[in-house]
Image (cartoon, rainbow, N blue to C red; front, side, top):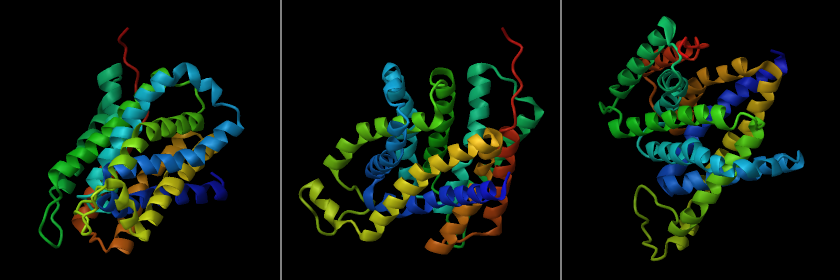
Length: 307
């Protein structure tokens, strides 16, 4: 990896780690539906011009039905789920839970395609999910453990990522990655933007102004929330995809995917620096166990001997 790619690698980890900070700011103010809709709309506006410029959009017409289903399990459900979880979980733990996606991928490959886990993967899954339980039971300075339902929703969202990846490999493998990403963002925005605009912001706490019509509540949203949403959509989703796929082309997918191991430390760092979230030794140790389990579980799989 060249020094330039190493800098991009670290920047990408910092950007994706920052997405949980921005989720933590936007989700309580706007609600899960609005965050998911506006996040994907902004990302689509970043990615779509690149795809149109490359002349690849017309090739998507034969697979639009497949793309709609893929968008549902790769963006609609997990983005809404993570946004809901961000209303109840600190940014640091949420970024750690998000890192379980490779573990779910190993389980999906084993359950749906009959791939052998092997000792290393089995150990990784045991460590990873043990670390999740440890993190969920963690008690901070306020002696309150993480919301169990929010933990389950966050894990379910990362499971959707794993299922979506398996679906894309089987049905959409012929599409260039950035074209597929742009198409998924466009499909998700098309499904969510209308309902989100109609319902308006759905904050965790009711608006003190008591707006009678939902669309009038948009003017009550603080400018800080809009800036966080812009960063989440344009930088953490749109620009990050461009950076990631460029890095993949130059260094290979195996090297580029290692960025997942640096996202939790950055997620905890941004939560501590910007939101004043406590980071205890117990939390760091459980995060380390999860990252180690993720590393072991995401190693190359051994194909099954079944016909």
